[in-house]
Length: 154
Image (cartoon, rainbow, N blue to C red):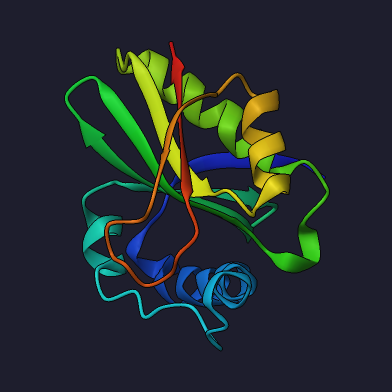
């Protein structure tokens, strides 16, 4: 496996949309019993704005991360790995590469949040140096699970 990290392109839209459905549906089911994740109406715009990065194995998209930049902070909105490829270090690869890109662009802080019941994700982020800042209910009010807010200073 030889992974490559880069910005998503408009030609990758449909594959990214499907990967998001595949990767995030188990999360949605665990949180609120929903049947499917999405929709992702802003995906094309976020790709065009350079806010989505992909992990490629050869030319196959195996993971993605969506981001929001706020001054010197880069917020990780969603990080997803193809369910068939989970457990192979792709999430860790994405986090390392995103951190490297953030440093090159003088970003001072990475931030994210995830549901407290997603203990596997909390372990992943902690292994990569993220520390918990606080817990709070989600602003959207769609479920009752606390979100763990985490940061990593660069």
